[in-house]
Amino acid sequence: MLKHLRLWLPAAALLALVASGCLLISGQFVITYTFKDHGYDPVTVNSPLSVVGVPVDLGTVSTYRDHKKELKDVSDLAVVGQVQNLDGSAPVDVEIWIVRNPGTLLTTDAAVRGAGVRVWGPLHLAAGATRTVGWDDSAKLFVGRQALIDEIKGDGRFDLYVLGSGGYHFAVTKAAIIAVIAAGK
Amino acid sequence: MKRLIALALVVLASQPVLARAGGLGVGVFGGESYPVLQDDTGNGTLVGVRVPLKLVPFVTIEPWYASSSLSDKVTSVAGLDYTRQGFDEKIYGVNAMFATGGPLSFYPIVGIGQASLKRAGYDQTLTSYNAGIGIGISPLPKFSIDLRAEAQAVVDGQTTRKFGNATAGVTYHLLGLPGLP
Image 1 (tube, one colour):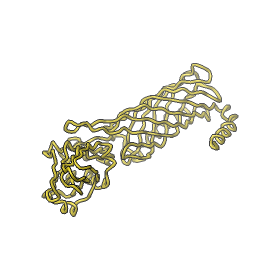
Image 2: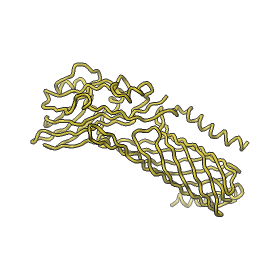
Image 3: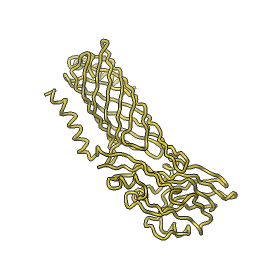
Image 4: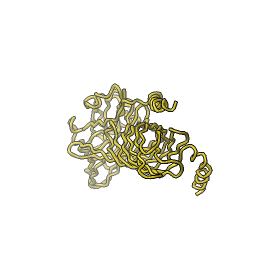
């Protein structure tokens, strides 16, 4: 009986793993959507009447394509980059908004706020300041995480806008969306 | 303090049973934890304590606690490196092991526990399963050395975060015979 236990217990543990819905063949994969690779570097916003949209299509990222069918969850999210307040006399609070159904890019702050959802920020920058937003910092600034997760789990296509409040003259360089997707068969 | 006193009383009260059945030990262990198929965290040192209780012949139950600090991961974007903090993992659980005892034993391990994974913007407590093999060597009375290799799967939604853990430990056997896992 005890001899058999040595075989049965590991087997039972394996069964428990499978029965719990946990998939043994799964992993966490980093996908990086680099703005520069799609012609959006820098993203310079001069006023609320001339905002810049970035059409995002995650289908252009090979890691995303490779795991799209087995995608179960998004376990980590960040928008990274260098943000520079080009206004030397006023601070700015920078936010990221997405419009879920991509189409003709919107050009005004009001139109984006009317059609989209805020997913990140605000990030406060003093007049003339520049800040590099890293992965850890960015992960803490998400406010609409679920909206972005839904897009990643969906068709992976949406339009992204960087909006401001206060001073409205800033630039974003070397930016990317970083997502850790959990995929399993 | 009250908990310590209660634990001491339980240990004292169970002495005759444990002595008859096999024994009780206290051990420390350390090693390395290697994430498997996880692009967003690196490997790290694992340290912990465990209390093997041999309740019936061949079967040892082992409550344990461990913590590890996994290393960071770096992603490069347009020439800039962005670092993601590795997880701080704290985990407690219980193992079941099957060994014959004696100066050299080879035993399978299975266990279940609760893992807390933390880093900036991420704080989750999740169920963890582990299974592996161990080798127990008892060079001195009351002492044993354990070498273990285990696979750990932390269930996160419909997927798991998997780790391969390699550890070495020393156990002091308070009661009963050494050579247990």
